[in-house]
Length: 350
Ligand code: PMV
Image (cartoon, rainbow, N blue to C red):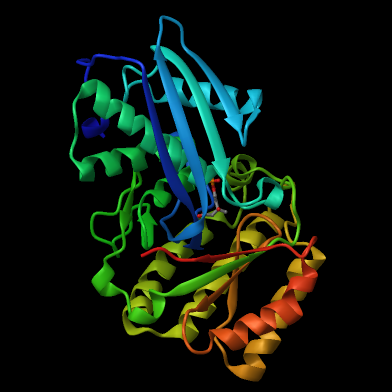
């Protein structure tokens, strides 16, 4: 932790920086946390490439601290309050951070109302901008440290954001299965431990329900504190890491599909077994899942799903000669279950 404390030797000046950061989709889910954004279990995600947040931060060195935020050109006072709180929270790591005025302009490449998590890409982009400013005020740090600290800072904004700083398969949370893994920041899953079949993947997001989620992730994580199944779930995530490690190495697609879908359904089952309970799926979510299962039974083709804490379905399938048949099926059979014929085509970044 000490390595992230900021130096008191800095010279601030006006500055403008901009950064872009992609979203990510978890295969083993983070759901449940302890104080200071420490995850209750390790998680692993694919970083996306099309769903991104672009952020520009203008810093004006002034006596009073203030934040103004614009989302897609529109001033958002609520978001500014959230960022002010966040900046105050990370002052020990960036001691200059409260010494000026911020004008933050941010926009997502995916539809704002889509329900696609923007907090991961959003906090990822802000953390990168802050490290650019830190370089200007305290002297340039090496790239590896800068990314690591950006991941550490992003985590304090939104846990899953720390995984968006790296491309490929990214791990957050200490697990004996991955060397150097940490609860404090994300690390890359070793590239030479991943079979080529998992390196070229599509993620098409079906926008089953656009708009606000029925439960925020803060509330969702909190519900795990009183969920009687929580400890078993955290243990299972560790067990799934051991399984996944072998799967990723051997290229066992069947087991990969089984594990990833199980993780998604477990996340939703946890919410159904919370008190109060939440059902985050909609009719369309269930219809799509059943159609995917039928399709797999009939064709044996590797189309499968994962879910965020919402109704949208992430359709996963490898990029290879079979993908045309899968894509035709999605367009013909699955898109009809979205709210406004909405879907986003993405691919994994490596
Ligand atoms: O980063 P948060 O607090 O928004 O939590 C996100 C949790 C899930 O997206 C449901 C799972 C994950 O690991 O990304």
